[in-house]
Image 1 (cartoon, rainbow, N blue to C red):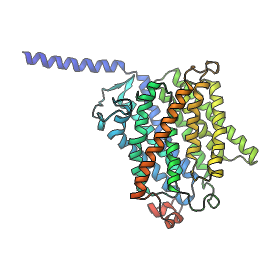
Image 2 (spheres, rainbow, N blue to C red; image 1 turned 180 degrees about the vertical axis):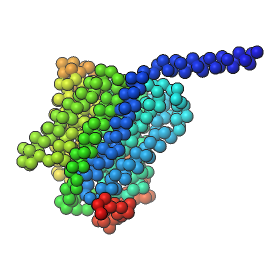
Image 3 (cartoon, rainbow, N blue to C red; image 1 turned 180 degrees about the horizontal axis):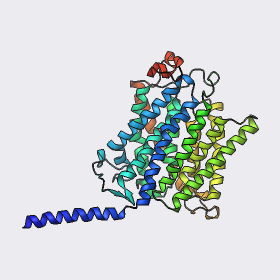
Image 4 (spheres, rainbow, N blue to C red; image 1 turned 120 degrees about the horizontal axis):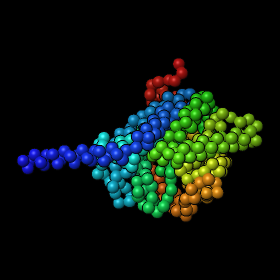
Amino acid sequence: MKKFISTVSIFLCANSTQAFAAENIDSGDTAWVLTATALVLFMSLPGLALFYGGLVRAKNYLSVLMKVFTIAALASIVWVIAGYSIAFGEGNGWGGGLNNLFLNSVSSDSVSGSIPETVFLSFQMTFAIITPALIVGAFVERVKFLPVLIFTALWLLIVYSPVTNWIWGGGWLAKAGVIDFAGGLVVHATAGVSALVYVLMLGKRKGFPNELAVPHRPAMVMIGASMLWVGWFGFNGGSQLSADGGAGMAILVTHISASVATLVWVAIEAITNKKPTLVGAATGTIAGLATVTPAAGVLGPGGAIIIGLSGGLICYFAVNLIRIKLKIDDSLDVFAVHGVGGIIGILLLPFLSSTALGGTGEGNFTTQLMGTAAVVLWSVIATTIILYALKKTLGLRVSEEQEYDGLDISLHGESAYN
């Protein structure tokens, strides 16, 4: 009899727990974050791949697609094995620990806020996919394939996941009051700064800057940028993690900022070069999107206009400074657009979130600056250590002959155009 009662009790407790979890799940929020998850993956595959692929020379087109595509698969598995646990597990403020390796604590009944935890971790997985994929744009046309994959796995575990915990996982920067709504620091600063470190340790492409051809398919660049623009609605709007007015405002300010930055880039090119380019317009769009990302949850329309204007102007001159004046071969301007854009958004957030501009009034400049310094410093130190180890063991760079032939043929035995 006692055994029967115990069995019934366990059954009732289990069912009551499931019922409680089900009651806490909002179907509207869940549906929206599921949609946002697909949109953010769409940003990488195929959006970022096509955007970057169109910018390189024809003989390296497939090598870029291959890196972005493979990183998407690799990052997903790294996230499942340990990345999610480090980023969102219970930890000490510096990391989430390893208690949730292989998602051993996650089930179909697990809940995160008003959505299933499986949906939350999948949404965050798409961020872990696109962030290291952004770095690809810095070292295209001259890097080995295997070291890129090893770097990606290590970088996700040592740089991305801990920083995610610091800011989004309730870590020390979150407790200090740092606001990064959708990834100005977590995504764009980490990727941009690490990209700069990568190219400085890798060296310039042969013939840089005078002998390199212009982007081989500007139309593809525009198509990829358009996919990124659409996907960014999930990136920023989905970061609200609910289907409400906050998500709506995040999408609105995202679109405003992208539009303003696009027009700024077109205007600058029209004034300085007399001929505005499609590639320039697309680059301006990405600059506006990267800049608004950290502040999308606290801005109003007025703040979005100013942040788009700032992102377009500053990122344009950052590109010219890094590529032309300093002659640093950040091939596709990852640091100048993503790194600089994300940091600008973080630092402008306290000023542009003003209620007079339609914002929420949140943010403190000193706190934002402190958070930026911490993330940049950690990204530089950890990335340098990872790359130094790889450079001394496997090497980072292809041979001169392989670089001359193009990575499509020399590394993958394929050609985009027969």
